[in-house]
Image 1 (cartoon, rainbow, N blue to C red):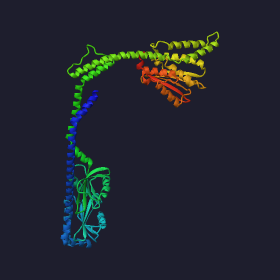
Image 2 (cartoon, helix red, strand yellow; image 1 turned 90 degrees about the vertical axis):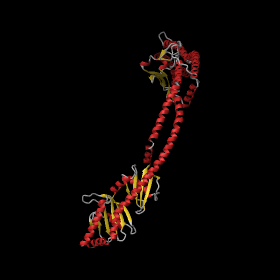
Image 3 (cartoon, rainbow, N blue to C red; image 1 turned 120 degrees about the vertical axis):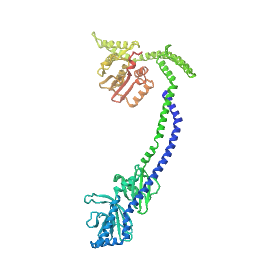
Image 4 (cartoon, helix red, strand yellow; image 1 turned 45 degrees about the horizontal axis):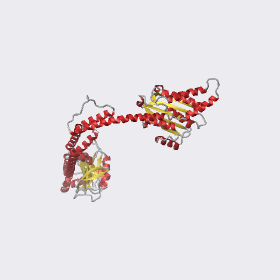
Length: 591
């Protein structure tokens, strides 16, 4: 009961103290989430703008060379002469050396530039910032030229990721190659930007939390990504291909079952799209980081509610616990004496409780008197039930005795055995009900009963006993087994033409004596078995007084759990069982 009142107080205090706290927490959560999402969107958009500006700065450094070529016809002319005649005079050599110095210094002074190529159409050579004049026939890096030959004539800018093969001591390197056609010269300038270096710079610009950064071309193909594996990039490829337009503002998108905040910025000059995808888990983590103190307050408030509920419950119900203990003792027959501690009367509440206690003790005394009268009535009823043993057995036995007397000879005969066994059985059944018997006494009585029945039905059945010696001395109820054996013989084995078997099994398990009587007689149909079980449960004998008598005695003495349980199958036999608790028979009972 104290637990119930504690839970009730906990509920009330929780309603009073915690609901306002939760409302405040929800409000803080909403405001924090809105602010954090706005900050993440703003930071992501600023990062994209920085990335776009960085990209423009890198390409501006690369294509500054185009202005040199366009505004200096002497450089262009010298380059054409070398491509065409493979030789040059001193002045051409000076101009070309100057151009290589300029290109090489631009590449070396900017870590984002791996190399710059200058190519004039209709020639089989190009100019490299690293190697100078190079032939397309034997230079190790010519994949850029293959890509260039596939581009439409009206393309001004084109960006593609590719790999420069290994050469000498230098290993292969992944680059982002940018093509830009020259304005007044029929040719192109090619800038190779190392992807690792570029991504390293982009990561330093991007927000500190987890995110996925992509650069897309005009066809929404992924040019560069900071994802760790190709599989991660592949997960977004289908999404970008099916999303033709990217709003600039941050929106939520579902990609392969995961939720992301998407921020986008466009580079109109090169036709590129910069995309930053922030996972929902990252956003939630950022929000939770701002909710640490509100969560601590909620937890502390919950602990306070629990302690307050527990303290008030113990304080207010200590006297109720005293009353409960007093009632329990009274029900067990333990009543307070003059030396017993008494509860002080400190309030009207205590006075009411003392009056209730006095009323309860008086009521308990009256109930004990009624219980004693009920017990005496039960003993009388049990005595009457015990005397309801089937009288047909005595009649049939006397008939058998008469038949044997008719054949009497002048020496010990079966008649003497029958008479002796019958006498013992009558003494056993008519003994005073308060005289206790054991399992061994009950089995001895059964053996005498079976011996008499074998004279009536010679060579018709045999009875087996399966009981351990350790349980023979346990107390047992008188004449419990005999009606069950009689039922097996009369209704089970007698209608069978062959030899029958009856097994008596007694054993102890889980602190209960378990008894079963099993025969291989005619058995019962399901309908008949169902009817028998219903009759026993409704105290209706249905012609089987012995079973009804035993069932009533078991229930009266040990409760419903000790009632008879019957299993039977037509043509196979019948098993009747019951169990009685050892604790209930540790002292002799009144039967």
